[in-house]
Length: 300
Image 1 (cartoon, rainbow, N blue to C red):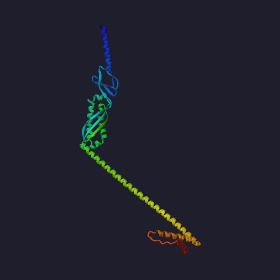
Image 2 (cartoon, rainbow, N blue to C red):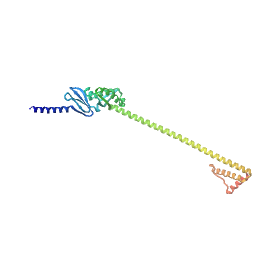
Image 3 (tube, rainbow, N blue to C red):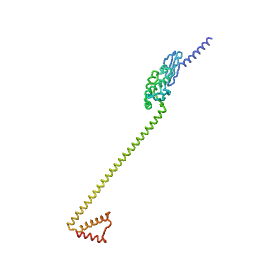
Image 4 (cartoon, one colour):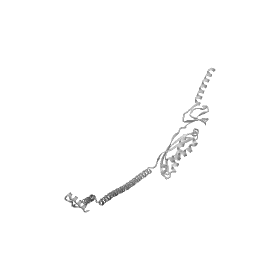
């Protein structure tokens, strides 16, 4: 009888020991932190991996995620500094850095952060005009991040980002802004058109100027060429006259006849080409023309 009792006791002790061992071993998942409580009081935090507790006096208190979490901020209507009403929708990114504070410093962590973000959104946007709210969204995000991060530090939470998802002004303001944008685009189009016409006029004026300059240079070059040609002709005539004078001085009658005949032919050609000349009297025979040249030579 005593042997059966001893065997039963040993078996019960082994079973209890196994149960205690299994309850003492805790496997904490990656990205989580578990708090250990002894008689309801916080003692320590189990990090990811294998952890041991005293199952008789201790138990697992809170299981807190230490990964970055996304927290939606409920949509709300906010009145700006210039009494314009806008609907604001935001989102917050938070991360627990101290498991004990996040577990025991605040009752409902997510709800507390959401309400904190709601009140600060009203504060920040309410201190700005509508134009600033619509054009300086990044500044709003920076201000909200700084305020919420400082407020959540006692809770063991780090606010990584605060983003304004949507800003919706009233319908009448939206229509007014649309008309303003349309008028601004039309004004810019007119300015661009005027600038284009101005540049075109300038280019045309520059083209006319260059054309006039090139034309004047062409006339100058032509006049220079004409003057040079006349100079060459005068030099040739002077040289011919000098040669004829020298021939006359030497008594060369043939040179004199040639010179007078050339002048006679040129004068007759000019007489024939005159625009107001209707009739031209010419000798009946070519021998008469040669005789006339010979007569002029004899006269000379």
